[in-house]
Length: 483
Ligand SMILES: Nc1nc2c(ncn2[C@@H]2O[C@H](COP(=O)(O)OP(=O)(O)O)[C@@H](O)[C@H]2O)c(=O)[nH]1
Ligand SMILES: [Mg+2]
Image (cartoon, rainbow, N blue to C red; front, side, top):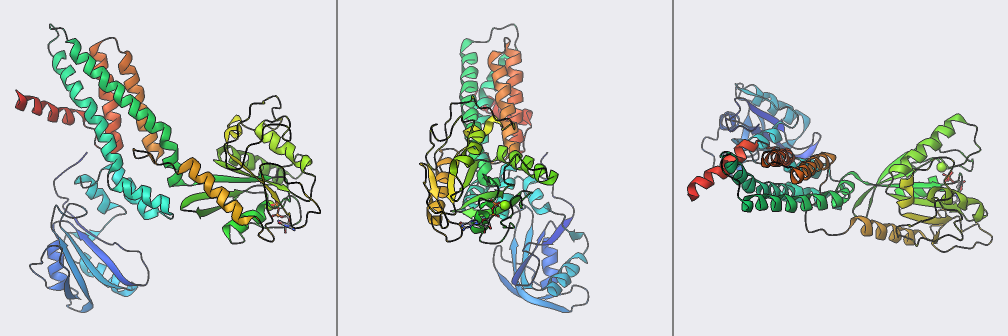
């Protein structure tokens, strides 16, 4: 999988974003990097990691293209692990095009493919797979929480965690396999106990990691918040107000919103995907609206938090059965009331909604909002409802605090270990834990060893290095030294 032989082709690309800018960086990586530096700037013996000022000229026509800085990073102390040169130029389209053309006119230098610098960094073991993903996440990060999770991953926290599990399993496995090579001798109990102990410890760690993992995935991908309620209660108005733009059409006509409108928001550093959904009602004959309602329900199924909006100008009791339906409640007014920001816990399931609300919904946190209090003649704000007027902004800061508080409660906890951030991690960690469960139950040491190997392979997939033989070789080498 990995190779330390240098790639024969030297690659070049713009490292900064395309477009007009004060400064742009062009990066060259590979064995021709120094040749390129010399041909482009005349600099022959660059000091490593030192900013050299120079005039950049086309290697064959000698025409001056720009002036700027050049830096040299000798292998292996560079991003890719190869010889790297970076040029800091003026960020105009013409300068960049001329520079790339000039560099590519040199032999064995070509434009890089997407991700090729990072791929070389991985191949040269400068980064493992989780760090590559951390880098991608850092480049994509839009909110503070996404940034902080990504930089930790780039710094190798997940790598350290996953390799620590490998190490916990490797030595006991090596001992076990060493004994398996001599079938005429019984394997000492102490060896079996050590392996069992390692399996248990790693299993425990993986299971905890999987349990907490949903948080990491949500912090990375965005926490999904669905706005639901009857038609015309002000759901689209609320979405627009939270998004501070007119993302959804607002109108007094019931059934205006028929598709899902999603906006991405940054709420206190948390990436949130907020969705406005079609108002929920049964009596529509409009087939597009019916499809919209079906989509609303599907989105709600996958939502992490629900904002239930009711209209203060309409009899509340007429609106609550909808919430009751959602939450499988017989009667919302007499049933248990979830307090704002708290996970709703419902026990009554006797009113199973006719429309097939999934059971998953009953465990979601629901924030209940009573909107249009500016025009309500008189309104009773039932316990657990937050009184709001999207029109006047009354109650808006309270809503913000409740939202933030809920996000903090659900996703803000500090865990001692880093969180998994992708489905890929979840699948591999799950497969590793399944293999370890099988290993625990294996009747023969050979089978136990086989399952532990499989678990090691899955853990190896996580970091992108899964040659279990090579890992074992290293352990065995240690054995010999010890003997
Ligand atoms: N007076 C008042 N009207 C509102 C408020 N929020 C929304 N509306 C109005 O209620 C109507 C329905 O709003 P809309 O956001 O389209 O509701 P939706 O069907 O739930 O998405 C529109 O005419 C809005 O201007 C509010 O807080 N006060
Ligand atoms: Mg709407």
